[in-house]
Image (cartoon, rainbow, N blue to C red; front, side):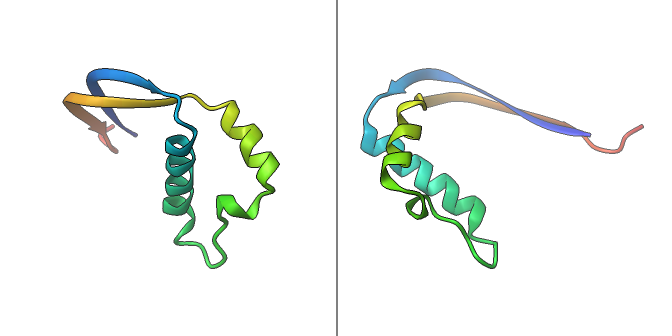
Length: 75
């Protein structure tokens, strides 16, 4: 069973630290919000967050085409 999405477009490297931090906070919140005791990026020490963000490369894609495919229990 799988689902896949292929996106095409022009990719840009995003080296703006504020942009990247916002993406990480938003992604974390979207995955943690359903938990009884959600974790937030701000729960970690600031120096740890800064060190982790230095190891992440942000990419933004200006999407021109998107296609999906799935196979679910079709044996």
